[in-house]
Amino acid sequence: MKCLKHLLLFVLLPSLSMAQTRDQALQSIKDRQGWYAGLGLYYANQTTHWKYNQTAPSVGTPYYNAAEGFGHDLNRASLSIAVEKKSLFGKPVLRDGVFVNRYDYYGNYIGSHYDPVYNFVDFDFGADLMISPTGKAYANYLEDGVNEISSGGLSAGASAFVRMQWLFITSSQLRISAFSAALGAQFMHVHNNGGGSASSPLVKDFNYNNGWNENLTTFFLSVGILNVETKSFSILPEVRVLSAGFASTSLKPQRLVGDVKMESGPFVLAYGIKVLKKL
Image (cartoon, rainbow, N blue to C red):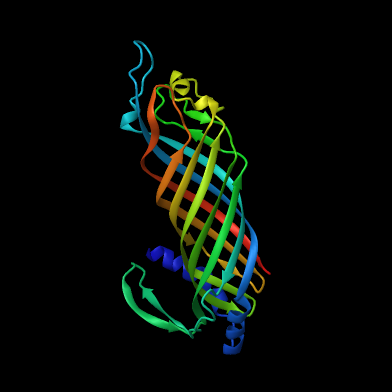
């Protein structure tokens, strides 16, 4: 954690040293407000967990006890169309400086000092429409080690969130976010084509080769990494952790008794970057 603080200060301080007037800082806050739109690119690993009851197989038939649960890994790269409303609650309050902790060579805290740099905390609202033309699915419980159960399939979804950002005004044309975090919800429909390379007899037993759909509804926490804003553009790399949600599927394996049910909620870890332009 201390190394991260030192790295952040190393990146920010050259810019923070640039001369600023209070009027320029207030104008920068004003310039930030409004609607933005743009594109994002994300890669996500999505994990779902299922179970179902099944009739007993015939003698010699490969068998996996699905009542004990089984999981899928769904890997997707997606393009997003994004919109954001900056300064959701109106003009934020400008702060004239921050206290910065100081450490000695050995990492021991030796006090703090006041840096007279302009900064503010702001809140934004955003929404994304996401589409992925390809992606693979894996079932890691297959006994022969060849786990690809789908080689492609179209996915689509949407998300909405509120983000908090702590921004430093480094010049009249540049702001850098020291920290940002967002809370939101996301829905994703994932179609798997069932054309994977797995050759286990269980592939046919689970009916993967006919293709199936999975629907994931999740809440998420997003952490922004060094968000950069100019007068007209916003660039935000982020990591999204999605969990505490619900999933459903159209999967209909052979020997199925009832429906395939969610054993536990889905989990998604996504990495991405979005570039937005002020409208």
